[in-house]
Image 1 (cartoon, rainbow, N blue to C red):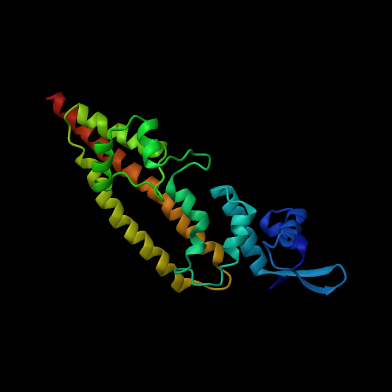
Image 2 (cartoon, rainbow, N blue to C red):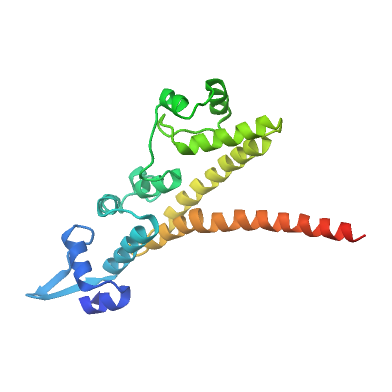
Length: 227
């Protein structure tokens, strides 16, 4: 189906100037030119505009990141690593302005016991990315030290790790399975499914499950005290 630019604006809520800017920057394909000053847009334009806005608003992706991803959009949705580029930074949980340290710098800066760090690395609880350490790793080590100072077992962290690995495998399967539904006009919809699952549903289900269990325990405790 073809649309005038005014219709694209109405459908997406994106100003005409922004749409033309996206075309100029190579984020959107050129419109079909019928004659001078008469252009027509199609469903792909609307689909991509929605994707661009989602990436900007939800992930804070730059034009260059989005452009790079869109260059790969006709590749296999499940096998193209470059398609995951905008997602990886968010999955890492590391702020864009985070300070990175080598292992030696990290140990010195945060006054970390090297033996403890090596132990947590072997256990997989500490997972530096590309051999670089941040405040994130320091906060986990600090937590483990609090467990140890109280002579408490940090098995719960090890269990988190095992469950996280299994869940990550399921998430990879989800991504691969979405490939089976890939069509010309559902590019942004498939990515929204993946993003919303990983960042919205996952957070909701995990936190609500913890709340539900804790709430039941507290309720049972109150009931017991009544008698």
